[in-house]
Amino acid sequence: MYQVPKLADYSQAALDRAAKELLSALEVEATAVTSDAEWKAFRDRWMARKSGILTQVNEVWLKAAPAAAKRETGLRVNEVKKYTRQRVESAWKSTLFHKMPVQEVRGEIKLRPEDSADFDSLMKDYLELELRSERIDVTLPGIPRPMGAEHPILRVMDEMVAVFQSMGYSVAEGPEIETDYYNFEALNFPPNHPARDTQDTLFIAGQEQKPLRERLLLRTHTSPVQIRAMEKQKPPVRVIAPGKVHRHDASDATHSPVFHQIEGLAVDEGLTFCDLKGTLDYFVKAIFGASVKTRFHPSFFPFTEPSADVAISCIFCGGKGCRICKQSGWIELLGCGMVDPAVYGFVDYDAEKVSGFAWGLGVERVAILKYGVDDIQLFFQGDVRFLEQFT
Ligand SMILES: [Zn+2]
Image (cartoon, rainbow, N blue to C red):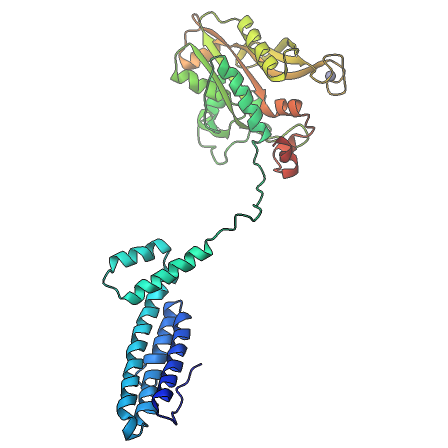
């Protein structure tokens, strides 16, 4: 730290040397100032009335000067004082650079055009520094960033949606938290249907006071979206409802409490089971290849009558029989049927005039078959080693 030296020699050259030494110490300290607190300490060290360096200069240099050198010493001391005050002020301005983003510092200049040349030259230095720090060596190798990829479930879902869109279906969406009415009642599930059992359905807690139909639950299928679509729109209707659904299922290789479905619905005058078969046959060929065959056999769903399960010829053995199709040559893929006329009663459609069909299938099921994945959990664990394979 600089300390004011006593002068033995009061010659011109000695005075010059002492002043130069003091000012270069001042410069070093001024440059180190970056904050308000540092600036205050710096100002007090140099300018404090009682013991600041300027006061010491007065005492140690001027008062001790021999009479013959008084005038000359006084001139130097005044110069030193004047410069020190300026430098302390400009050091405060330079703390602005540390406090503000560059744009604001630039704005500061515009706001204060009357500011001293000191500030302008400081600004110039600062911009030069900034440019230097932003210089880019274009010959350096870049940082490789891994490619992102669509999640396999979303990819398969998009693919299936595109197939139905090409047949004129539009996409409908609905809430994941549904009322019992939309999830069960309007779909013709009688009040004692086993699917309402808490073993299968996740109900929101604390709703015992509400009437059954108003109770909230995590939708167990995307079928409520079909009811909502029919409420909004008179026939003809052609919608698909892709989305996330929830069941009270333990996780294992083939079950997950969260999975995805795509359901479809077509209602119009004169639609028959033939239209349903043609639509689904076209769909599975678009997804699994033109050689895949479909087989419909009777089943039961509360909201369709008649209902059918659809199997496709095994995509692994071509129907000859293998481990995956359990030697049957067929793989169960989806459920479907003609919309039960009772459902139309809930949405104010004329069951005498219109007919329609609906189907639903699990997206994970299709992804498992398409990509040969043996554990549904892999889709939800977020393991990059698994997901990377789909880039
Ligand atoms: Zn097979």
